[in-house]
Image 1 (cartoon, one colour):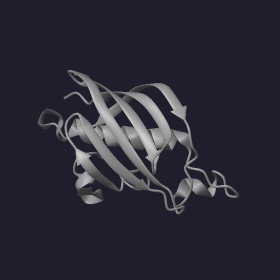
Image 2 (cartoon, rainbow, N blue to C red):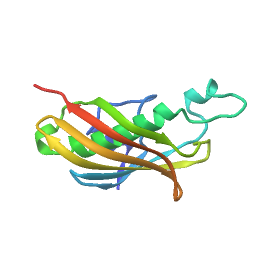
Image 3 (spheres, rainbow, N blue to C red):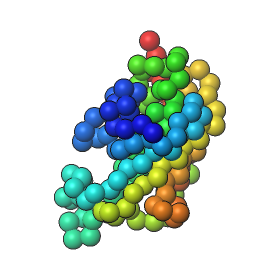
Image 4 (tube, rainbow, N blue to C red):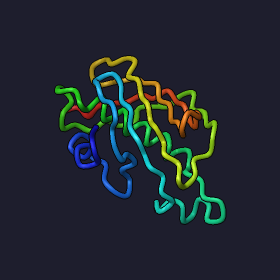
Length: 141
C-alpha cells in the first residue's frame, strides 16, 4: 500500500488538487487507488451547498491521477509529468457524495512511446460510479 507521501514522489499533484489518498495495488499496467470523499473538499462549497455531489470532472481527474501513478512508476518515465491527452466514452452511473470512498481502477491498455491509453472505472462499494477511456501524454525531455 502507498500513502499520499509516496504518491507525491510519483506524480506532481498537490493539495487542493491531489485527489488520491492511497494506492492499494500498483503495476506498470494496472493501479487501484482510493479517494475518501469527506465533504470537507473545497469544491463542495459551490457544488452544491444544499446537496453536495462530487463533480464528475473531478472523478475523471482522480482516474487520470491514478493512471498517472501507474505510468509514471515505470523507470523510463520517473520524474516526468503525465498530461491528459484525451477522453472518450465517459459515463457517470452514480452520484458521489460526502462519506463515500471512491475505488479507482485503471488498466493501461496500450503504451506507444510517451503516449498511453487506459480504461478507468470508479466504484463506490461495488457500484460503478464512472467509467472512461483515457489517453495520456508523458512529458518529453
